[in-house]
Image 1 (cartoon, rainbow, N blue to C red):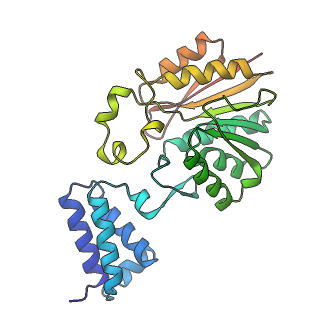
Image 2: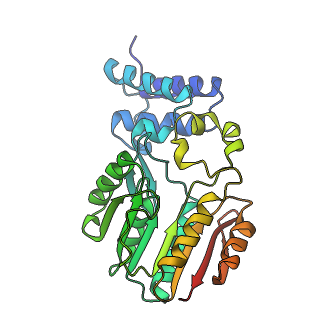
Image 3: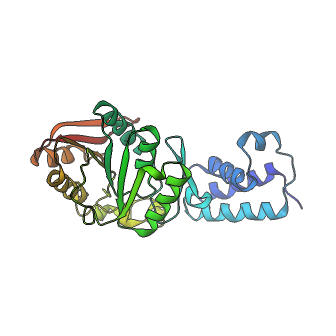
Length: 285
């Protein structure tokens, strides 16, 4: 018996709901849009249209993957961020809306201080430097990641979003392979900040699918903040700025790290939920 679009959607919602997927209706809808290559309005208007058996089976297979906990974004292969589209797979973290606050604050710093040269540490999908370069015409970025697979995705995303000529991608463990003669004016990072002992407490779809190396921030979650902050201090040739995304309870600790190293003008910015999400500071050589 052939299924209509509405039948398929109902089957998807039922399967996801029975497997305790939080946004069962939304995810079922998005997967159906993906399989059919249509938008939500089409599905609503054409709910009685019969689906080809091949399309229905494809849809049910994707629903089964989601029911097992595989993130929706890895199934459909992309995520929206800052109004742009980013390709994703299990070699990179899925961009989160929280990180848009980091990008928006960076754009403000860039425009207020005439910044043209930035360095990002730990690029993943490349969503941070790509979004910045897309919105700031005069900015050039260098971005690093230890993962060759992540850099491959980031380069593809730079091409997709038409900023490949503005970004240099470097495979490096933090600053190891970044030449010291660069004169970066702004340093930015959304580093791994989950405490090692907290990894097991993460949602299944995070800990079993997203790269652990991009999540684990060491025993206290602050390892990368210390290392990056020390290196930025050593590399700064004149006044420069540093911006971090931080975990929900880490802003004070990161502020203390920057204070201890001599950073000034330290500020904390909240996300849309009112949670401390970005810590920024300045360093004068």
